[in-house]
Each structure stands twice: as C-alpha cells, then as structure tokens.
Image 1 (cartoon, rainbow, N blue to C red):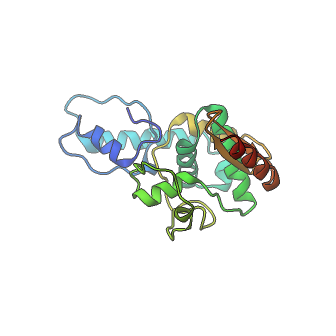
Image 2 (spheres, rainbow, N blue to C red):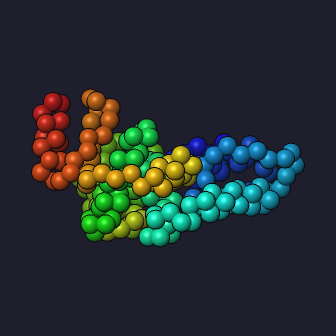
Length: 205
C-alpha cells in the first residue's frame, strides 16, 4: 500500500519489505493505492504494472476539460499539493478550487506544503512552524516566491484526490488558512475577507 501524501523516502522504505532490489519511482509515475503482486515477481515488472494502472486511470478522463488545460504531470503536481494541505474530501475540493482560481488569475499559489518540501528537501520533517523568513527562500518549490506550479509533484497522489480534481469543483475562493481551534481551513473570496478572518482568529489566540 502506497499512502496518499507519502514522500519518496516513505515509499522506498516500504519497497524494501517486498523487493531485495528496487529503483526510485517518481511521484508522477504512479498513483498511491493498494497493489497486489505475485510472489518472486521482479521489481521492474511490478513498476511497469503500476505505471500501466496510472495510464489507464488517466485515459478514462481524456475528454475531461481539466486535461485540455493541464498535462497529466501538472495534474499530479496539483494533486500532491492538495494531499499535503487537505484533510477530508470537502476540504480537498475547496483547496482544489483555490489552486485553479489562483492559477487562472496568475496569482502565486502561496502553499505552505511546497515551502516545507523546499526546506526539508522533500522529507517533510520540519518539526517547527514556518517562519516568515522561510517564505522568502529562493527555491523553485517556493510558491510564495514563484508563480505557477512547482517543477514537479511534492508527494504521491491518491486516486480519490485525482477524482476530486476531475470533478472540477467550482468556488470563488482565493485564500485559506488553517484554524487550529476549529481544526479546519477557513476560506475567503478576497484578501480583505481573508485578512478579517485571520485577525479574528489571531485575536482568539
């Protein structure tokens, strides 16, 4: 089983349980899911099986309007951001809509998970809160500094999250932050509303 949001390191550790020799599998090559393999199956045939399953999945959506605007690799990158930011399906739908809205408006994505990926070199064990200085680092995965998507996905993406992307859920939301007291994200349609919600949250702390 490959868990949604896993890092490459997580997956490599899991692979050692089943294969004596394995090679790196990229985030964009496969879908996080539960897979079955034959005893004594070699790693390369297992890898090709996973890639084939991913290709069949995306082939089902070849006429979806999302695939008319974004490549499969870009969709997986978007999915990886949602995996690291979202909690449940409703949360992921709203975050997906925010990402597409910001891309369509040529706004920086400003996603914390991509900054953590940059700082930790993809390992995610930051063990502290992000500082304002972190958001200014010069790194291609820093979506606070650079417009558009990161160069590649930042985690493995599950089928459920990809299904959500292809739903193309629509909102007017452009901003969100995580409310620790409510244990959920708060979404806003514009910066003034976002700032108001943030100030209310901070005043409660």
